[in-house]
Image (cartoon, rainbow, N blue to C red):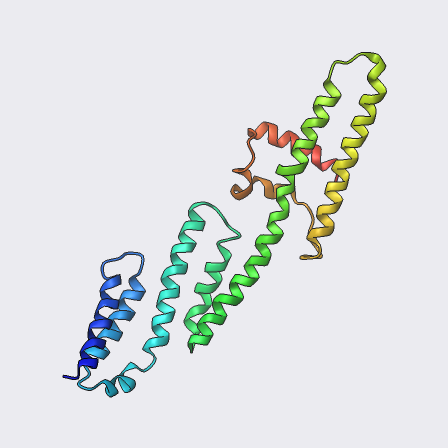
Length: 217
């Protein structure tokens, strides 16, 4: 047997064995097995060209399906509903791929679409990073026990903090609408796990702050 053919058979066997028994790569294992069997049945290397058929494209599809299924499982476990959209969309379309280029395009387009959605969703961070701290400062300023001679200073500070809150709310709307012209700060989104888990307040405190924010929308 041609030594090059022997080497190729060994190569495809190793590729198949890499996924054998791995529960995360069931599609890839079956695809690599089909490739190995096609190669192993050849008596001459030139035969592989006729026997391989569409197996290379199916191999690429299989790998994408396994990897995106794993990503989807992870994102769903952690309730990352926006990030989960990319693997969902890829898995919905990947079986329609007819070429390696199709495989790449389907993945690339879905990732780009969802990358934009992730960026838009990121504007909700303003509640945690800006608005809640400003509201806490406002509460401390209002409740501070001070000599009466500093009352004007207190009122000035209150006005400045409230102006800052309004400015931040206005700015985030302007920025987000470059991405989505219809975007508005929907405070119910903050209760979704991907945002809620980042805010170190109990539910009662968070509800209080969100109700306060509503007065500035």
